[in-house]
Image (cartoon, rainbow, N blue to C red; front, side, top):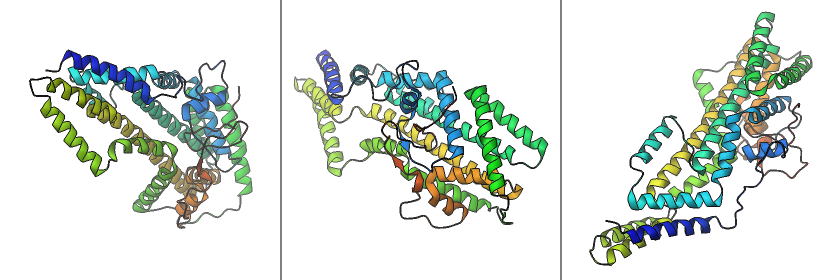
Length: 404
């Protein structure tokens, strides 16, 4: 049985390691919105997204999506709650306290069935409870991905209506998308987006009035799936959130053969030594505890952390798949119905995802360039104040203009 002395040592180690791990960080992460009445809209947006990237300038589709999503974030109680929870669990004290609780659980197994229950609920999207930084980031990311997909779908439907030839269908599509946008962005923002897209659609229809639509503008099921796979794989290579999650998972999964063998030898030796009745037993337990905490934590907690990162990865990939399907379906529908604004919208969506190279690869069957289709959608670090940028899907730019 594990000794009381080792238990006390575990608590002290948890606090000391937790504090040392995050030394040099401040209690409040950078660019976090503390109070919406005291901070600007840009700070709120940056706190929710964290990455800004450059795309083609003066893109009205991008501007409308950014405006609707930014307003939805400000109006959503859940979004603000998720952001506050990430702030809360990023603080040094709470992160050190988590290390201490994990260490106590290692010594006493006080959590019982809770870890397996938490893992099962996470896999099935049942009752996700935020209790640390990993779960808070997961909840925030899943909300943002779902909200972004809904915004894009509403914008595409509204543009479909503006380009429809049947007046009755046109009004039904516009009214439906307007009603949906009002639920999360409010009536003023919905009306402003309607006016922007109406003007843009009229301009596109007039500018491309002589456009020819190919008779073979549709793809087979296999061709369509291949194009969706191309879009998802291309944008995944340059997405900052995918890169962040992958890097963090690799800290758990990428170990040298020497490190792997060493961990097996050390843990086996300490466990065997802990069975001895003399003072060697408690010493071996303490040594194993130090080794586990010093190598990133206990395996049970590592697995849960990886599951939350995996859920974020899955959510992001699902969002990419939805965006790809919307862009592909919009293009095919535009070709079939000769809907000029919708054709331009599909091109805008593809260019925002992966730049001009991705658009030509998908719609004109040209090979991607050496940069993998990054094009004008290449990700860049957050710009300095005053820099005008546009944003990739689910990433708001500093130049987003929103009506009060």
